[in-house]
Amino acid sequence: MAAYFASLNLLKLARNLPGGISQGIIWGIMALGIYITFRLLDVADLTVDGSFTTGGAVTVMLILGGWPAWAALLIAVLAGLLAGLVTGLLHTKLGIPAILAGILTQFSLYSINLRIMGMAANKAVSVDKYHLLLSSRHIPAAILTGALIALALVSVFYWYFGTEQGSAIRATGNNQAMSRALGINIDTMKVLGLSLSNGIVALAGGLLSQYQGFADINMGRGAIVIGLAAVIIGEVISRPLLGKYLNFYGTLSFTVIGGVIYYLVIVVVLWLRLNSNDLKLFTAVVVALFLAVPYLRGQSKSSFARLKRKGGNEHA
Amino acid sequence: MLKIESISKTFNPGTINEKKALVDLSLHLAPGDFVTVIGGNGAGKSTMLNAIAGVWPVDAGRIWLDGKDITALPEHRRASLIGRVFQDPMMGTAPNMQLEENLALALRRCQKRGLRWGVTREERAAYREVLKTLGLGLEERLTAKVGLLSGGQRQAVTLLMASLRKPKLLLLDEHTAALDPATAAKVLELSEQIVSENKLTTLMITHNMTDAIRHGNRLIMMNEGNIILDVSGEEKKHLTRQELVDKFAALAGTPIDSDQVLLSQ
Image (tube, rainbow over all chains, first blue to last red; front, side, top):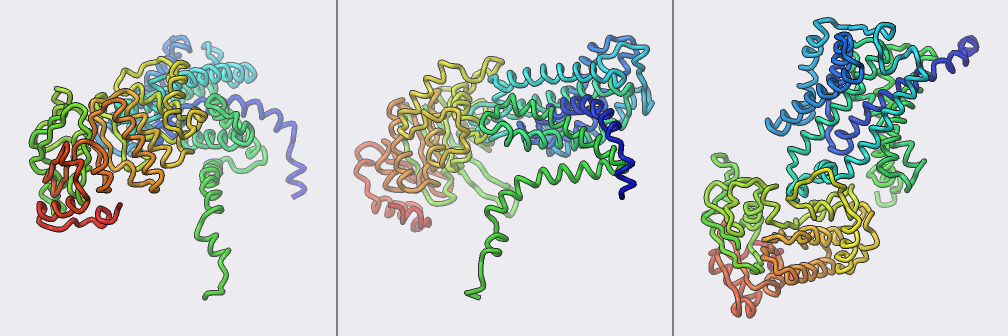
């Protein structure tokens, strides 16, 4: 045991933290996309595991084809919008439950992503040969770029979901019967929300592929879980921290920060030399715990189990 | 104002659960009519309101509202003409949105929802004014999440939302049934006030015979998917609960089956 602790090198941890931050910001941006569906529309959209990779694949292929990185990202966003559109139409026009519609799109995207990458499972784009927006080779610059993009997105979100159209999307997620009665076409709003969400997710995929210098067919696996983790961590820490001053701007910012915290935890876990193959199990347990906390907290205040604990046997 | 011509609706046709909910039902409402609707459970009262609102398409017949044939319009397109308050106080408002946001959603009923700001400053002042008329102190809680309001407060807000953009027709579907008696009376009084101030054509379902007699200028009684009694004017004013119960027994061929109708004062 002592030998184990002695072998841990704090300097090494400090060296790895900036990388965790930059990667966390990128996943935090993706979590903003997930926030739209999970919190505003109240659907768990599983398309993201596929559309994240689509974003990465499109970005890398276009950059390899000579496109400037920003233009490649723009097309990646459009590809993500399209993926969300497909899920939205499967759900609203064909009556497929949202979660299943997302799974179907995600499943089909595996083939599509392979085609985008020319049937290769992995495509590298070197920062030495191409001009990329951010790279793990220049971490401070990557953090700055990522943070600026995140800030811009949070501002756009804050504006958009305050507009009439954005309000209609939120209303749809809140109360469908009311929304219809107020003349909101809830099908349109769901399709719109799913598209926007996947557009943002694809953007994050495009950023990550540049950051790590390659797109991989499996890079989006578990994206939904990481996104949920970021959203939930953000909520759990922002509420006590900001209290009644917590507005939509704060919630969104903390979603990105949630992504950063998640990745910092990963860095620490890896530093503790836990097997990296166990990371997914670890993440799932963390997300399950955080999802359960609000429920369990409610239960501890009012539940049959509590009555059982309190009740005596005097009438037995 | 509202013209319903021989509409029918059967749920689960051809199955063991088949239910003829509306059978060849016709109804005409003049502008400004305030009609109360009574009848036993399963008589088709809510089904009629849902047919008018367009929750699903009818099997046969046509519906006109304000001179327009709305039979083929989906629910969200009819919403420009119709204001609704539901029985469940949870159904009429968005719980996670602020009070002013809810009202703003209602103000934009069936208008293009573009990229302009969702709530403007001038609106806010106007909301404060209309909320004052409710007398519930809600004008001080514009930015409170509606989920924090009580059932009665939420029904009052839903009423406002339904009438904020003056509808051609107001549908009240037992909107006081889930409230305690004092709150129910208050919400009913508000409904009366809003309907008369805006001269709204209104259909109000109630399980309370006394309310049905006291409010509105016309009363219809439904049974087995159709209207079996339609009284208005002086005749309606002088109705008594006992007369209604007797009429129901005579017209429907069975005594009224709902304890709720008989017992509610």
